Length: 145
Length: 145
Length: 145
Image 1 (tube, rainbow over the protein chains, first blue to last red):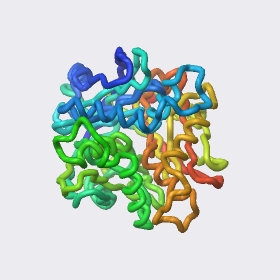
Image 2 (tube, each protein chain N blue to C red; image 1 turned 90 degrees about the vertical axis):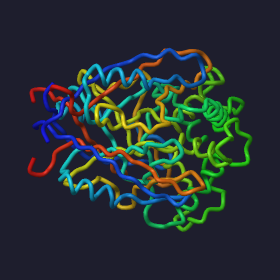
Image 3 (cartoon, chains in turn brown, cyan, orange; image 1 turned 180 degrees about the vertical axis):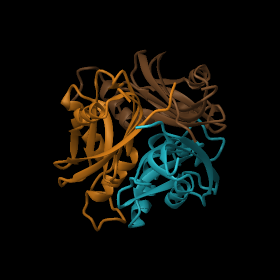
Image 4 (cartoon, chains in turn green, red, purple; image 1 turned 180 degrees about the horizontal axis):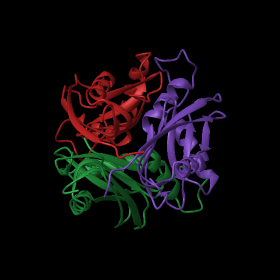
């Protein structure tokens, strides 16, 4: 084994309010651009009212039920001390707490080691559309490096 | 400091339905096989209805109570839009959302930096036994490298 | 791209019972000490009744509401099989399950890629103060290396 290189990047995603925006293809594209062969991809969302999540990419009803579950976990009609930014803001922080701020995906054979049914998504918790910044890091072997 | 190597692997685990399967020893064995000295171990489960978790390895009742808590978080008797794969499938996705898809454990002195009471487990959310694939990545210094 | 170095460290934090202890500055200091330029920082808490969390660092009421939400997720007055270590112990394990045991933060331009409102915290789940050990790993480019 020899020493491995490191690369960084940032992507920005437009959400359309509460819900999922798939970014699997964007991550694949970046790995391809840098010639990633084997190592570790990290995606980190630079916000506390949106999350990153890996979930089933087949039946869209799964994502409907996940959003419903999040509303039950963090209802808007509870009394919160932090209420200045609207009824959806504090629930968004709670949803952010129980979801992931970063994902770490091993890369092997030039591809993420995602399972057949796994897609990578930005999970927006706010009601209004937002522009979300995601920092990327890859550490590992690259082609022709 | 000099450049560090990278290694990858995949392990497969048979679960026996809802519950915990400890994989701490399997991770130790792989780190030993590759001569890992210091760096970062990542384990990533390639499924959306099972999780990876680090929890207390002492009193087994802790794991009983954790399973009970998960049933409360994601009850099977709620009405879900995604219901074709059985009453335990959508709750499994919800449990997967609030647990971890990957674990990242610093390695120092040739060993994972786990605390005294920390064990690493596959957490099966489905009722039936499943075969689960876990991708491993290590980046760091290795012995005699 | 050339091979990247790796560094490890451990910090210890005194908590004062349930609540948040910010460690953003401690992480910055360590990155500065090792001359970290670009790569991946991992923080890993070596306990199963405390967590690491990235949350809003502005309005302290956010953290009040997050603690309240955790009490609702894991109430002390539920009957638990694991009860020998006090009424706050099993709820702490449940809170630990739905929060993060490790955080992975890309480093770019010599700094963590945290968003404007993101702070890094130890989240103590036990009622009594505890001393918590956090293992750190950095893999990436360093200054003058």
